[in-house]
Image 1 (cartoon, rainbow, N blue to C red):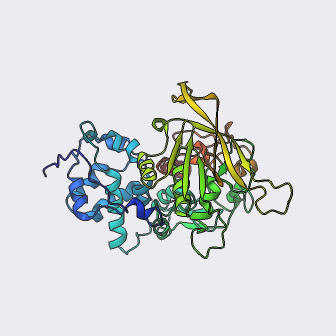
Image 2: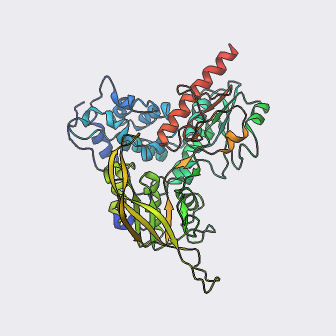
Image 3: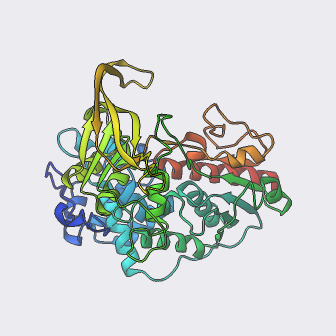
Length: 474
């Protein structure tokens, strides 16, 4: 087959910015068949497959793209599904530009192949055309417990289920999906997509128990006593961080974790929702990652007239995906760069303590910054400019400066070693912790990271668990 030498990947159709900024429908609309075929024809089908080296779950990318070129979309899906338990999710939220697409040879003299866009197309085609559930493997007699139903937990569960393991996933919340349902907004990842992926795992035999808090409802020791032979901890990084500045306890100050959970999982954006959430006119979001972009774009859709990203470095250092930054800018989000909050100011009426506005946010004092020498991370360190304070008038502040691993499991499990930041210490290749037959992966180990890295950790741990349990039998 001839190669399409078009230097740029085909554009992803999307809602116009002026329309999508006022609804929670998915922004990106996906390729149609004709566009997917043309994009697939840009692939050189390299023999050494550098793109696969950039994929944390090792999808055979040239093989699935070749099937797309041939018009055999179901065969393409089956190739992806051999390596990934969440194809439709990864096609939407995986940072391919920093992983598989960054290795693509076509990127040397132009743009790389739109691998992520093709993965999404294939997964969506399968979901729209194939109703038959996957065949359940023959049970092998082994039982494994997975703590947490986020991307690491679901990936581990899926890999083990395909090998015939009896897998039970324990989820603290009332809905499976972890950060996929509570953290990522509907306009980036529709929850029906996540539910479809979860249903596929259930069809493989995975049992999911919601409303079960490991460390309270049950302990890791209880799981072993119940007959589970191995435990994989994928409890995520749900503990929000704050700056420790004055005013963070005022009404109208949220962690991004809480703000997004109220909106995404509890459906606070719906007109008749019982979940309260701020509907502010002027919102400041502190931080520059993907979570900050999600929070800012959510606040805009909730009716804010002005939303600002407040970030202490420049646009070049902004850690969020370029696509998310561009979408935010198109929608009218303001980027207040090279500035950092000093304190949050609140309303106080000393004459009338019953005033409902008492303790509410009225502004945020910020200080301007400049970039100095690179710090330990390799990025230029932000340095304060003396006497550069200014007032940003806002009535809500969302802190999106990161999260830490949930401390509950480590505090209730003896012999589980953690690092200074609360991450569970593991052997990198296997995910094995300091306790025998206890594995961990994803954000519970690394702190907040990407969905696909968590999936890779879950897959690696599943392979290690399989080796350990089958060797024990032999």
